[in-house]
Length: 168
Image (cartoon, rainbow, N blue to C red; front, side):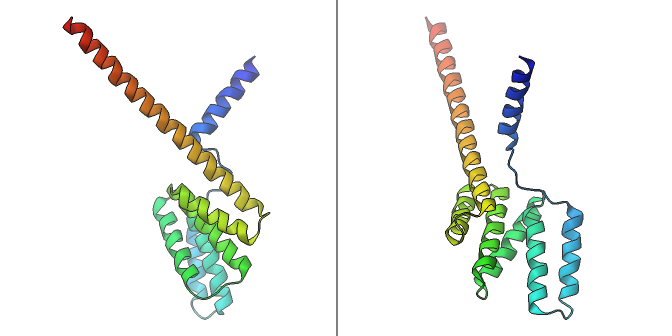
């Protein structure tokens, strides 16, 4: 019985904490990637610069700091509008952009980008997992919204009933 109660509380905690499997990144990793990009800008090949910027954008969109996530989104959007990329690199950038939008709370945009990744590679597990996390979050937010609306409606109805009963 205790195991079932513990399992129930784990599920509730996961529901409200948004227990997704997308990793987080510490600020020291972001700083290291920024240093790497700065060093690459001093004369490395375009390929090395691109790899360093991709690692930095990964770190930024996985950061716990909203300003880092926004910076990562901006970097990725700029890189996507630039020169053409291989399908694999395009898929990777779209995925990272989807993670950034997920972290910033723009779930519809994140789902759309995850679906674009799956158009490039339909069996890509990371994109499938991200799409499921987005859909779970949209469902959870909808359920919470419905619960809040129902509670508000019940409070209003209760207040009206109390007001009407006092008039009699």
